[in-house]
Image 1 (tube, rainbow, N blue to C red):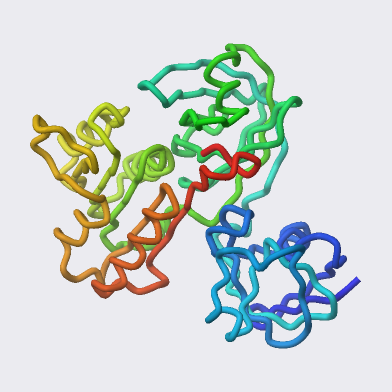
Image 2 (image 1 turned 60 degrees about the vertical axis):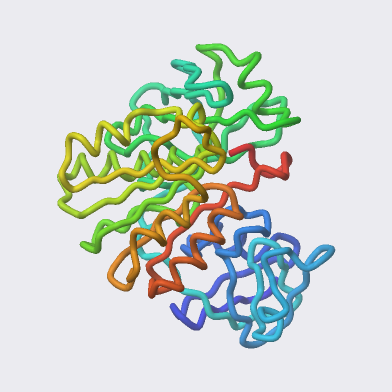
Amino acid sequence: MFTVLNQASGKSFQSSGEAPILDDALTHGLNFPYGCQNGFCGKCKAVVLNGEIKYNGDVPPAITEEDLEANMALLCQCRATSDLYINVDELDDLANIEVRSLPCKVEQINRLNHDVIQIMLKIPGAQSLQYLAGQYLDLEHSDFEPRAFSIANAPTNSNFIELHVRLVEDGQFTNFIFNRLTEKTILRIEGPKGDFFLREESDKPAILIAGGTGFGPIKAIVEHLIAIESQRKVHIYWGVRAEEDIYSNLPAEWANEFETISYVPVLSEANGAWQGEKGFVHEAVAQDFADLSDYEVYACGPPVMVRAAASGCRERGLSKKNFYSDAFEYAFEESADD
């Protein structure tokens, strides 16, 4: 066993050297930031101040040459090979959120469009899942590896969990959900997970950028803001390929009902009949906001969209600490479907 000490908090924990350092940190109750846990999003990077780590196989794609030179490590993929002294900022908001494994029943299945299904899960009895708006969970079925899906409803009724599931080509689990999953099926969930969630203490105007089913956690954030009667300005941008991919009218309804909410749908492959914004969603944000120094940005969707949004927002003065993201990695079926 190795001792891992975090300079930022002064907390330490034991790491076996067999499991990723992040796994051991979470097991010991430390609230390290993380996202995909597959080595792609880069949210669990930490500085190794002293000690040695190793990766099983190649260096993960989220680690760049500059990261290696700066002694950065990806905690979800590396193992300790000695005692470690690291530096990583922990998340106070997650201190009272417990990751739980719970049974659930498929209450409803609704097809939202040609390739997105809404699943409503009910947690039985008096049990509930405490989570923060924007987080995700792992959905478990005995025939498949667990899959990560964002929670698409606000935590106002935590007996019910809403998921938006996109059909992934060659995705075994999503094909099962679309073609064989039935109501009343018993599944299990484990969560909540991730550090993508609404920072309620802030009063900065928020720009919410969704790509595809990245609308799910954005929906949860907006519903929560409405539920707590927040007066924060909220600007929603939803990027999809074609108009048929906009699978919910809720953003337009919110914008009509609440003066604090605006909504811009953006089509990257628009036909001639489309009168709205065209192009990539991050470009629409850049076009509308020249200075983002006093904003928070929440971006959720495919990694290429999230990276482009992060870069574009930084160019317009957004502080790195005010950019929050969750990147869906569709290309790796063994990791996550949504």
